[in-house]
Length: 185
Image (cartoon, rainbow, N blue to C red; front, side, top):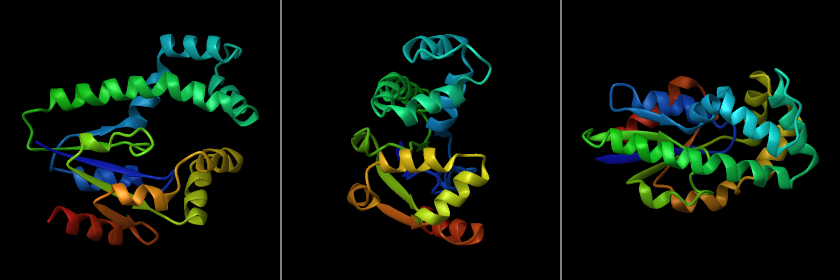
């Protein structure tokens, strides 16, 4: 089995790239999709509400974002909660798909989480910061939260040395597709 990791900075186009490259080639695990499922789980919500002293409202994610922005230690606390769960789910996905010849795993913090040794190939999706901010805001994201999260990620220049391929995603979708298909070929 070939395990391909797809990573990159916030709003670089990892999800789009992952869907393009995995289409009809193998199953895809998305850490972001798994985290979204976590936030819908009542059990997880209770843990977050208790750990961060958040009011149990329908918009508890907005309250959590405020907690992250106003106290940087809260990001580490949240990371310690989420990362082990994502890692466990990632390993379950690999085990479940062990008979497949190729699998794809989209892991935003693959390098920061020191998961490089679990992959046969790592593709880094790179985009300039101004474009990433524009994408993030167009999907309803907050500029301050983007800056906060972006500043707490490892710099692209440090991540690149762990990656087998770098795909610059500053142009059109068709250009991105062509670059990704060249890697697969």
